[in-house]
Length: 398
Image 1 (cartoon, rainbow, N blue to C red):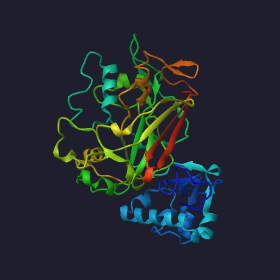
Image 2 (cartoon, rainbow, N blue to C red):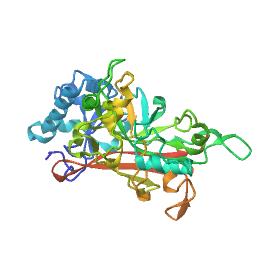
Image 3 (cartoon, rainbow, N blue to C red):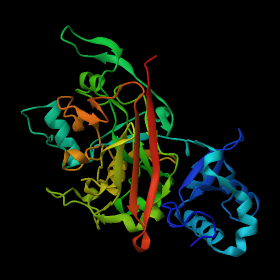
Image 4 (cartoon, helix red, strand yellow):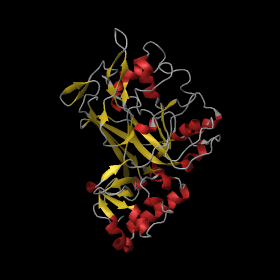
């Protein structure tokens, strides 16, 4: 229980406490933690001596704090819980609470590198059938390693940032043409934010996942399917993916998700040694995708074939180093049913089977469309916690 007003029953209670960066009235960016519809100003709390983090909470991004490592993350989280639950601290802490409605949320961390995986068997199978009809839906390597590509860190934007329709080459009956994408899509994903770096040349084993990963964000990896289809062979995603990737403004600490870890799907054939995670655990995150305010899909993250720990181990098996602020995303989250897919490519089966969005029959995104992705996870004692939403509205090509 907390003494903060209006928090009872909120999915942003003291068992959640996601971190973000905000600005109020044009002030410099500040780190805060969400409690209900309030933000606790952690920069102010550290300046007042209420919480200690080697000055890292006074910075304009989470990077310095995330670099401190898990013992410090745990100590600060425990102290925040104490400040928000012990009434003795109320006189000192209450003036540091800022209404969420009065602030602008900013990108919470400086993105160092961005990697996107392809870890849903259902999504990969669907895409294989759509893009390669009459061929096996999964390529021969898919069940042996987490497939991924290196994205563009500079185009990762915070939730609420408008998304400009990309322009590029696409195929036509008369050869390639250049112009705005006409098959603009979304990908509902979950992202993992690295706090503790690693040494170039060293591997990060699966069992060290929680020592390096600070927390979780929701991700919308916007995708221009027509540009992607023309360019992706033989080297994979490039301009069809690199124009914008939206992330939630709140980073949910891994510790807040302790009750959400569940057995991941069995892997057959058995994976090679460096990918063998025991226990083999995924996260029971329940996503929801809204298209112009109408819920069109509920992708289940618990069914992802490759786990976050396996993805991190594969990302570094060649000795590639981790940096504070690295973001790696799960790839599109899709379940076995059409109502559980994480992209409109799958929802409309490549545009061949339009979906109903309100009174309209739709395939891909048109200018002015808004997509919002939310998610919940089980918390302690039967409670539910929420991950920060990620939303974006499509603007016309420039």
